[in-house]
Image 1 (tube, helix red, strand yellow):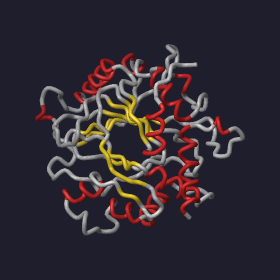
Image 2: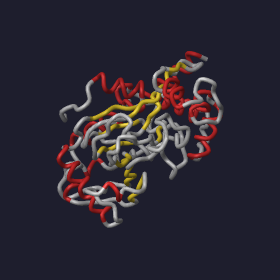
Image 3: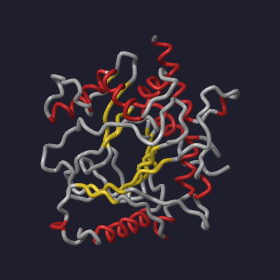
Image 4: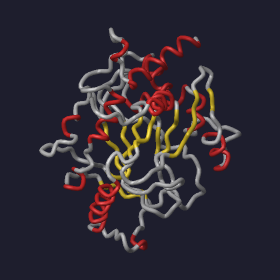
Length: 308
């Protein structure tokens, strides 16, 4: 049995809110080395680390995935074990590449956030809110995503471009997908749920709200206030922050979007997925075999039945 990475409180946090941070999932010095590798890739585009005047674009997408000695060292057993503690032991297709010198996976793509939205007042954006998975049809037990892993390669302070996540939204998505056993394409599903749920409609700007019309009002409404919807689901927008080497493990159904970077510090991060070997099983014979990921979905569906 491997040494546990996540404690009981962290796993419960994931189930309730849809995310958990693993600090130093890979070493800080390794993450910084990878950041330097990426700066060299930016130099090829005329963007120089030592010359902020060359940072003329608010966001630069490096649409490549890399393998190098630096990135290989990010494939740690600490990160792999934390992932398996959420999705279930030996249920992840890529577990074999972690901690094994001969086999490695690639890391990418890279949205390098220099100053996205810096010319405007910082607020909770209306655009971009989604859960991941444009490449597959979505079911409540879909295996393609596993988890969304937000992997940090730079310091990300508040208002520094950290991904915004909507806590509790994984429960909304679970209930919505359970109502569509025939499955839905990604964007069609997101658009339909945004239209259907009043809070999401206001968050995404589909419906205007008198209490969320200004930047300050949106921060108060969506970040400073814990909202409870008509079925008892608690929702709140938070910023993900952290240090190089931290990884935020997110539920595959969690709504998230890019945020403005007002710090003047370039943000380096990439997303990873942890696809499952087979579909999630929400009706296991032995309750002890449920993963926290499966339990979170079962709980969302069970709570709905209770409140109906």
